[in-house]
Image (tube, rainbow, N blue to C red; front, side):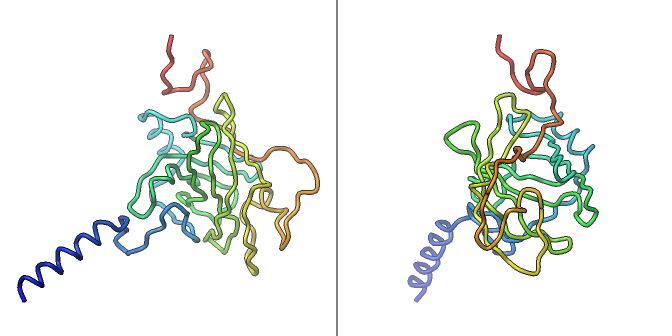
Length: 210
């Protein structure tokens, strides 16, 4: 009996080790964002700027302005036992004209692709009070100077839900039961505000080779 019990414990341990790491609450999201956003504590514009200034950054990282929605955001690397390593970056709200959204609200996630300038990006498309819901997927392009990140809205994968207001209305305003884009529009995306290019056209904290 003791030998069988020991064998069972060893087998269960092996199964648990083979399973993906999970958070303390047992929720594991894998390589897709949760359906409802998270709110992280302690996020301010000044705190984000100081933290970025002390860190080596990838070109996509930094503080961004989303002028169409009057938001200031930070794109940062993160790791969590709740997520696959595929989701390498998250987009966190620092300031917004919409006072119902708290600083620290995660509004999206970013995954890398084989192209250094192309990213798989999820943005929450629905708002229910202070909560954001329904991550929608699109393709984002980081332009060569790394000062703008634009979205190809035609690639958004949308699931319509009713009785909810739309989050990021300019980006998602074309969404209906059968979404169409019937005319060409100006690009929608983020504009980098920190770090900015220096006089040599290199980004702060970026290694410049001579």
